Each structure stands twice: as structure tokens, then as C-alpha cells.
Image (cartoon, rainbow, N blue to C red; front, side):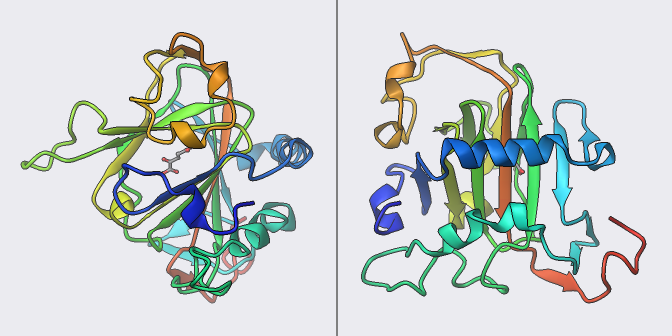
Length: 242
Ligand SMILES: O=C(O)CCC(=O)C(=O)O
């Protein structure tokens, strides 16, 4: 782990984004994949261009029903996340969820994308504190960041591309959350990847795996950790929901 997030800040992106290439080990990645794979079938929601699990439950009117995350989603990821200060000077209490209402994430979306699948450019909206921590599993994938035109429409081309390798952590905050949109292109192969097109190129673990700017897509699973602002005191059980 870096001594602070300052060491792994993605230069060139609006404030602020951070990338840690080796956030979890191969063994930890496998444990997570096994848990995801053996989750009860109804946990998966099949969407048109991806599969999704929501933990601990779906939001209702932007509020989380107050059941905790299962241990396999909290350990070791959340303590590790909170152990990394934003800056060395700021001290250890000043971690990335230091200003969020619950001081840590309480919600995880698990998305699985096959080659050729993706997600349209979007914003994550007001239900969450504006910090998103994404752990990537199995394969690399580009997150594209888009601006908006004056009339509010999304720009056609991404302004920036972030490459997320397996076992990496990407943190996006601030303007990246509130002002810009993010999406994943529905392609089976990326082309034209390199230091001038990938804004976290200098933070990658394996840029040498990209030959002639090309990278074939494989199935990639992501865990996105967020803090839902409103937590209902009615437990998920009482409401008869998972
Ligand atoms: O899978 C990802 O990395 C992105 C998911 C996403 O855009 C979202 O959950 O809002």
C-alpha cells in the first residue's frame, strides 16, 4: 500500500482520483470471486448489458435498509481502504471516507461485464456520498469519463480514460462524481491505448501487457463501494427484503 493517496493520485484528471494497482492479492481476489460465484442465484439481476448484485440490498427511495454488509465484502477491503491517509501530513484519521456520514462504505454493487458489454455514461446521483471505490477482478477494463455539453447532453467522446487492472483499486471523488459522467464502452477489444490516451498509465502494474495499443477484453467483475447517505432504521428483514 502507498504511504498516502497523494502518491497514487491520477494526474490530469479533475479533482480527485487515485489508482492503486496492487490493492488486493491474487488469493484475496480468488476468495471474492468464489463468494460472488456461490451467491444464491436470485442475487444476480440480469440487465441487458451486464449482470449485477446489490449488497446488502437495493435502495428504497434513495435509502438503505439497515442491514450490514457481509463480512466477505468488508474484510479485508474496508479496513485497508481506511488505513490509507489522503496525505501523510493529514494523519491517519483523514482517510477517503473521513467526511462521509458513516465514515465508511455501507453499500456494494457487484457488476460483471462479458467482452462486448458495458454501461452507458451516467452519474451516480444524490443517494451517495461523492466517493466511489472500485475494486476490479479478473480482467482489465477502461472507465471512460465524459463531460456535458451546454444543452446538458453528454459529449460524444470521452475526455479521459482510466485503465483498471485486476486487483486494482480506483477511487473517484469530488467533481468527477458530481460534474462528469462515467461509462464503459461495449467493445471486445480496446485499441489506441498508451501513455497519451490512458491517464493513469504511469500507475499501471503491467503496461507491457498492452501490445501496439491493443487489449482484448475478458470477463471483468467490479465491486463498487459507496456510503449511502440515508439509512432506514427498519431492518431489511422486517421489510421482507433480502
Ligand atoms: O463497473 C464499474 O467499474 C463501473 C460501475 C458503474 O459505473 C456504477 O456502478 O455506477
